[in-house]
Amino acid sequence: VAVLLPGQGTRLTGTGASAAEDPRFGEDLARLYAAVLRAGGPDLRGFETWEGDDPRLLDTSVVQPLLFVVGLAHLWRLERRGVRARALLGHSVGELTAAAYAGVFGVEDAAAAVVRRGALMSRAPAGAMLAVPLDEDAARDLAAGLPADVCGVNGPDTTVLGGDPDTVAELERRCAGRGLSAQRLETAHAFHSRAMEEAAAGFGEFLATLPLSAPRLTVISNRTGAELTAEQATDPAYWAGQLRGTVRLADGIRTLLAGRPAAVVGIHGGRALTNPVRHTARLLGLEHPPTIIELLGRSGADEALAHEDALARLWAAGCPVDFDVPQVTSPVPLPRYPFAATRHWIEATGALPHERPAAAAAPVLAPVPQPEPSTPADDAAETAGDLAVAITAIWQEAFGGEPLGPSDNFFTLGGTSLQAAQLLTVVNDTLLLGVALGDLYEHSDLGAFISRAEELAAARDDAELLRLLDEIEGTP
Image (cartoon, rainbow, N blue to C red; front, side, top):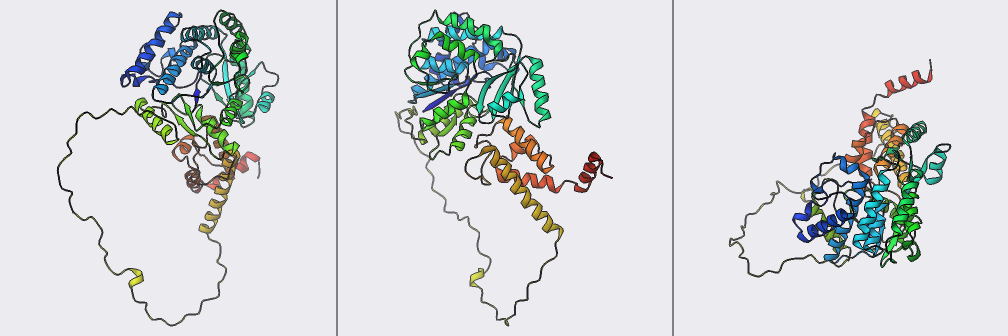
């Protein structure tokens, strides 16, 4: 089993609510809260009741210790149920959580490191981050001449750029000029950029005071995308560079999949980290892709039910799971009633077609087929066919891999919110449609999406559209 551990930007509202149903999970959370407090960090008790707009969820000095607490507590919880991670890939601060679970840090030292890291990064100058639908080289070309940095490479066509607010605003204008749908991240700083150099130096100095050990499990490095070595794990300068340098998530995912895990579990709600794994597995054409699971379910899901569902899916993938089923200590009486013999069936109303006698009829010569004149219905069918071909090609370009079919789903293919925005831009600009983001969410299978696009095309006033185009182009 491989495990993904999130960084900032992941939904945390309500996370930990299932502690009431699992007292040992609640005890783990309480133990880690106390460790964070002893390290001079924030009071995280009761965080599962915080509202989504709570300002603490945007405070780096709070969010980073919180991600550490939630991630490590859920790793311990999985272990109690028989599921032990053999490989871990954490995003940004998630790599420190992975290292703590793998034995690089003791629990108290890990809590102190995360508290110090969050505090140092929160003091950095204000900044912003922008996800753009480009590979790393194209993203660097987009940012040419600006004081911007590549903060993360999340996929073959998803790169995160960061800089001061004015720089990121200019990046947004450049994206708009190129017809690119960019997405600004919900952060107050440009993490993993030049703005973090002072924080990185301070973090390296702090880690030099802590004992560090070689990892006992496979931890994948953000800096290299390869397995974290003993030399890197025990070098304070590595962790300082990890805070400042580019997060090479895409490379890390390929390394993770090369280990051929039976299942990949994301310790988060939603699909922020799991969808890039789905997308990469498809692009690699894996013969036996892993089962990919969100431990806390989709956004807004009941955490306790999502956790049990995740365990069931792990078991179905061949992983040993202790379902902790209570032993029956006394027989349970069953209800005593007869099964009713009521028949619920639709009676035939007459002879079936193959039972009816064939009527005698004189032979009729088949007429010579004549070409049918084109009708509006024929033209509409041809247009719909062209539309389906064009949309299928756009989806295929976005996801790559084996040919797509009508039942392929945007989200199970690994589609992200950034990719959704860019795909809709291409569809609408290419086909002169007005497909909205909600249309994609409600019709996320390729076939259903094509049907929705055909509905919008049928309702479109092409004559008016042509007139407006003529006006724009200045055609008399």
